[in-house]
Length: 348
Image (cartoon, rainbow, N blue to C red; front, side):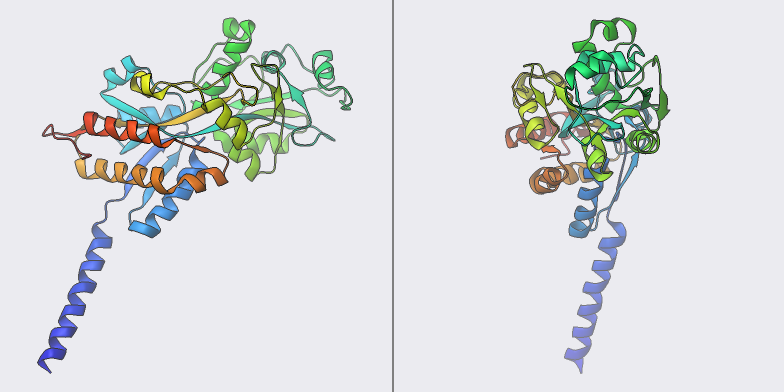
């Protein structure tokens, strides 16, 4: 009987420890870019099943993510617009790339299938400048011989919130159109010349799906998930390419992460015949000096796990995982830059 009681007590102790472990597991909080939300959600689900640690991520746009990490209301912020080294220093922040992907123009034009319509940077900029207003404009027709385009007015859709997707999109347009660079420029939020605004990639996708003869821009995973009609684009080498894992990887191939101060690296209008011209990385922002080192360690544990185990999930959603050599650079930066209030490195 004594042995039985001891066994019961042992089982009870193990159960209590398991319950305590689940109760005291430190969930992490993040906010920001909608661009990577599909893969972050996938990673979070798998990570919680593996470790019991959850991630509460608010998909509110890069501008909101930057504001929240600066206010220290979340454990990490997320932005598709990398912060320049001087801005990181000003905020006491460090950043690192999590994953790469593509921004794609999406349209709702009767009779036009996904990948059928061809655009180039100049035409895309002129549509968003309000200089091209009809789908049968000669500039569009010239790029699309044999495609039947009606005399219908184009409805332009853009982001209404502070958005890293907008930064990637407008950074690209600024590189390929002098008119765009002069009249609008680049940023997470710009003064749009025409169009209607949707909140998040979700909002833009929803508007384009509902509004006939519209055009918008979204992260590629949203285009796929919503079965949207995307366009081809002419790249820097003069080749028309479709958005996919291959063309995103081609654009990312020339990235020089090793020499990018603060991991500040832009992937728009990159060379290469197969390169998708509106490619970008999405970044995680964290404070260098951590008031809550345990939470910071959980964030790093999560992204360490995602680097090691999340590549296939990322590829399935047509994101591009960070190369192993970049992952090593990131972890070295964690050791050097992210410290507790005692000055000791959190990642070892």
